[in-house]
Amino acid sequence: MGKTVAEKIFDAHQVDHPYDDVYVLNLDAVFCHEITTPIAIDDLISRGKDRVFDPGRIKAVIDHVSPAKDSKTAVQGKIIRDWARRHQITDFFDIGRNGVCHALFPEKGFVRPGYTIIMGDSHTCTYGAFGAFAAGVGTTDLEVGILKGVCAFRYPKTIRINITGMLPKGVYAKDVILSIIGRIGVNGATNHVIEFSGPVVESMTMDARMTLCNMAVEAGATCGICYPDQTTLDYLWPFIETDYPDRKTALKAFLTVHPDPDAIYEQIIEHDISHLSPLATFGYKPDQVRPINEMTDISVDQVYIGSCTNGRLEDLRIAADILKGKTIHSRVRGIVSPATPLIFQQAMDEGILNGFMAAGFCVTNPTCGACLGMSNGILAPNEICASTTNRNFSGRMGKGGMVHLMSPASAAATAIAGHLESANNG
Picture 1 (spheres, rainbow, N blue to C red):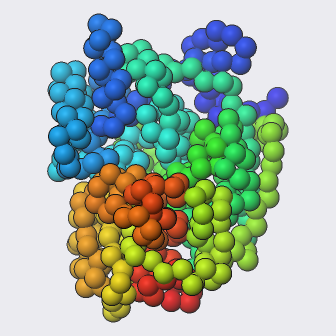
Picture 2 (tube, rainbow, N blue to C red):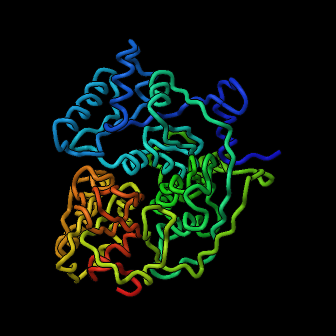
Picture 3 (cartoon, helix red, strand yellow):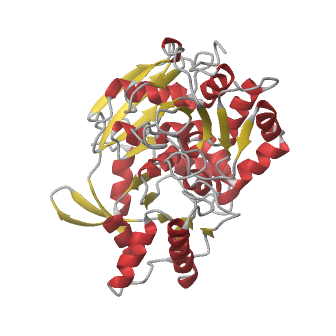
């Protein structure tokens, strides 16, 4: 019987099968940030287990509140900083070298096809864009991962979503994933892996694939996976060129991660995006989705462009192109946060940040702060934000605030108009 991508990865990493459908897997990497990891560190210390399984396979960053906004967040940063020094974790990215984890770690070449990765962050599923199995976990699993380099999972059931058609003008990866979540619901893939396949995915850049996989968890999925191909190889080649004799050999190895032709799926969904229009959320769940042109009567107070979903260079280029020669509405606060220092530097070199500033945007350092309502763009009660982030839960960006999720193109058009708007109409 054929195997799905996740089944192949599980079979290659299994070290134990303690009971029923629970499998213990070796981990290729454990990623950490300063919000969830300090809890695990303190607990390990209290148990007399202040050790790490392999400092070379642990990657850590301060990104959620960067730099610290108060004493509490400063302490969280100090805990993970001291821990990294104590255990000689060389891939620790402190203030000045840090960026949003799910943009920074792929950019550094830490994610590879066939890898198993955990992190105490639900959007760890982003790394599936490279053909990896990557999952967000709780404190106990994170502790075990740090200490032993293993994690227990149920054997994966997979939903395959074939995305077909041609992307219409003004429609991007963010619109595609919002349309999928709107179709299957926030629980539509619970305890499942999603394989994103089809010609639309094959034509996407790695930046776009990461957007797609980043929001798989918003449909309940453990992980979203794309098949590694030439696009993946081109992205990773600077980091893996010494691992293979040539590109052809590397690509052949990547293809072994692809599902078998006779793989068994829980469900196969055909998703045609030929007639898709730019979308945005309208309530407090990511599956509450409508075409933006049906909501242009909603005024906004803030527009945020950034995050692990849409803070990459491709996203900034798209938004900057729409903003070129224009000024955002006088009522709107525009905030843009490039996701990593490299993206910031590239955007500065290309004149993109000058364009944002000329349009009236505030440019901030790389941080997750606004997305989870901790810093750099928190909403007041009853304020409305058009955002390129991934969650629109009640209070997500500030108590009493409302968040409308959308693509960078639509966010830029909204900033200019002062109300929800797509780039097609802006």
